[in-house]
Image 1 (spheres, helix red, strand yellow):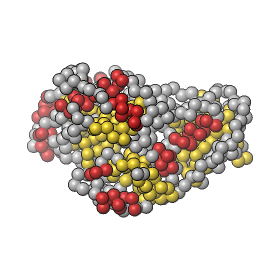
Image 2 (spheres, each protein chain N blue to C red; image 1 turned 90 degrees about the vertical axis):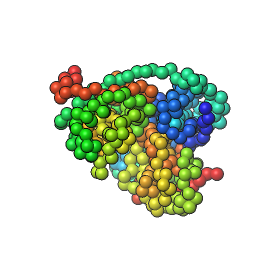
Image 3 (tube, helix red, strand yellow; image 1 turned 90 degrees about the horizontal axis):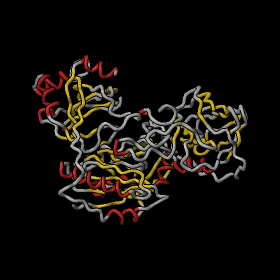
Image 4 (cartoon, rainbow over the protein chains, first blue to last red; image 1 turned 180 degrees about the vertical axis):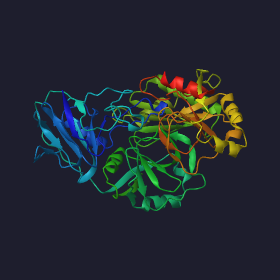
Length: 286
Length: 224
């Protein structure tokens, strides 16, 4: 009972809500990059919202359903097709036995999700099915999907198809709502003013670990490092060169850079979908 | 013992103790951490102890910062008997010979010590595991001899083998996974520090002692 991967796309991994509880061993949480879109995909096929699904980045894959399945596609628009016909996103869709679903490069957004009714039945590693490639754990043998992989899925289809939901926009310019971070007081008012006035560009060094931003460097005081302390999704660190890095799903558990602000959960989701070269501005919530 | 609890984004709290790296602070953090774990706080997903802080991540669908703060503010730890002290000394075999001691000649040159002196100093005393973090199974160790404090490489290596043992400023440690890195490598352990199929080798509060082994012992242990 499975779907067969015909082409792999750029970097498709299996993800669920994340690997919680092993952070005291230095294990990153991993999990969905755009949590809202992933939840929506699962909800559309009536899965529990944190169920394991496919997360494609930038360029999508092609798969064949070896039996009828129900899927829902959310997030980045990768022009999904069933055989040679476009299919809707943000809607549960039945794929017939032998049906081939293919995706192209993202026309907007970065991460596209495919939830399968009943989930994807790969084993849990440390209580999660999320792929964490650096340690080769979770997902499909701890790695991105490859041509020829067979993903075990339920052979049941969803009887009642819900109506389509509203599609959230995928933006190339975002305002990132944030709150004060642990080292807020270590940065001068002048530097903070620069930080909030600058329009940053999304760097091509961005990935599941963190999203690097480029803009006017933030001047730090002589104390530009801290005693290593915890990092969470949405922590914004300022490196010694004065550039912000927004820590995301695969972020290390601890770090020693200044933690200036924390993004809201909504802002993390928005930022995850901004492509390289896109723009971001920080907005402090009072 | 004074501590503060602050909001850390929308789905986490940060408990801060006095900002210092010390055995005393470590024991307090560890005691607090064990206490928190025993409380089984509803909605808490992970508790991460560090040198002088504890990060608590929670599911905002289940609980909220105000609730957790109320539950945490009355946590008391006995400062005289801080934590159940494990006194575990974990022996980690290390081959300090070629081909594993990639930067040994630089370290000899920089420190003015011979290879044997470096091996003796590095493997003599147990190191306290202050915390694990950064990468799966990576230990922050305290207690490196001053004579072994060597600056990082100017240009990091693109790939350091898993198990490589290195020096960097006041730190010594073992790379658990193949990663890029700038530490001066003086040996390698055949042990696997992080694996999803075995329980964790070390925990915060353990001591680690490096035991020198020969190349043939290394090969034997690795193939086992």
